[in-house]
Length: 418
Length: 166
Image (cartoon, rainbow over all chains, first blue to last red; front, side, top):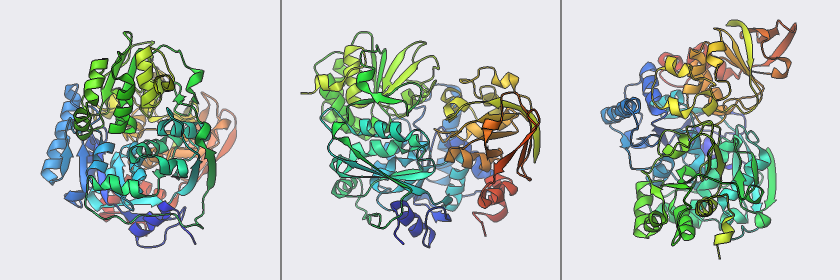
């Protein structure tokens, strides 16, 4: 019987054929925790009788959610993480290194066919590298740290076939927002999503990460793509390892197959306070914004900053708008500096903050005030998400956020793209 | 496990940011402190109103969003006996079982705010005392029953040194 991508990866990691709804205990290739989840995992590690991590080379902690620490409570938790990683002898990415979902792919540890668990819901991002990666909680993370294994109910798969060609000014972010609006926040609960079709093939590897990253916003366990030349070219920048691509069989069984023609897609936004509250940007164009955020694990990569700089370069951010830019990693930051992107953004009026998650998760680096409206490239717009439940958050592409920062109101980026 | 208490009703897609906001959860591992802010963005007085053994009753996709385990832990620490919902987001569901917060899938349309409920987890029965109806429960998968019976995943690991579902 044919298998989906996730069925194949769970088969190869559990030592037998795995099909949807089977329960398997699978070997994991990499285990990651961040500063919002790792401290509880350290506590669970001890409660579970853990002594050493299963493999020092296959474990990492990342300090990114409040980096650098904004208060003494956070500092104590960071210290706990540093001490634990030093004692157990595994790698810790500290403040300034970047967002976990940029760092783990950049580390070269993850590629096609791998199985990764991370104590962060957006761990599904690495599905863009043809890996099954998924978010878990702290206790599951501790179980993974100790045993190098995790139990799974093999998910069914929903396949999104994206035909056609995205128009200039319309990006992978617009497409994934549109798809989430179509299937809603629980449209793929405990399913794997597979994204295929000519529109996905045409995307850069960086653009693909944006789609996989937001799979969890439709409830999905994973957001998977096939590997192609672009995938391997991207990986070669970071590792010499060989990975065998995993493709679904032609007779694989899907829970649903959804087909879309993306050629007519306009720029999209997710309106407050739900990620699936999606509308064409034109519906809310003109709404004043006081803060604009470019960054996060969704859209903080070099290509995103390049697109933003293409719009902001040589212009000035509107006087009533704060523009906050957080490159996804130190590497992205350095590359963006070398290309002159950071220069353009800062000259335009951007405040560049330490690579990290702060502005997205409401810990620091840009908490909005009561009654303010924010447009952001992040993946969540829940009430209070950015640290103030009396603010409103719109989600959009880096181009739309850049254009809105210039005009002071939600703006179609195509006004600035020749 | 049997619980009796009052229903506190919420809607669909209650995400983990609403259960415990990021602005609090990154600062401390003290769940008693976090419990004071449980559900704050949906009902600022929830912590004052909830009595030990009461129930959070919600629609579909409860616990969507972030993987923060502080969400089930803070709910438990606030004294909530169990969460009843039409469906749960998967990460939250796993986290709840791993940490020993009872989560029950059932038709919560049969429950109104303030209804007095009696939940018998072993028997899989919810009695709505106010409405005098019994609500059937979707049983937990056997793997999760095993983890719960072992006292959560920590208990399971202490017992077996790893995963053991045979």
